[in-house]
Length: 106
Image (cartoon, rainbow, N blue to C red; front, side, top):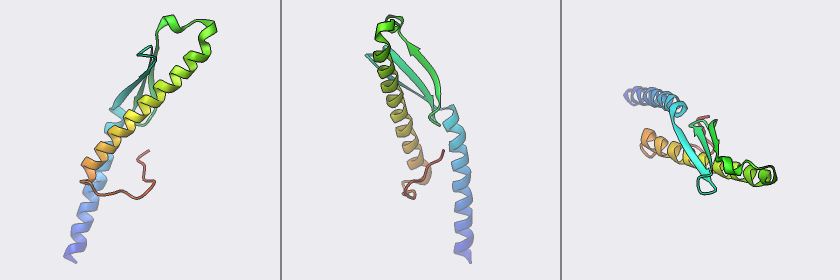
């Protein structure tokens, strides 16, 4: 019975830490870039785009396709950085315990 109470307490602590992490994720940001910094995308920890900057020299009608490709590349770069930060935070919270396959916070 004592072990069950200990497990319940640990589960509550983990739940509290997960809730705190979700709040931190909303505030966290990562910037991705492409084209040697000509296009920059900022995402929050949930993967929502918070900012987009494009150097004016790229805004020519005949270069629209290139700009689109650079925006996609910058977005993917930012998304990768967000995922790396989240993974590191999860390791910190769970003490390195593996989470179930497909487990996602958002």
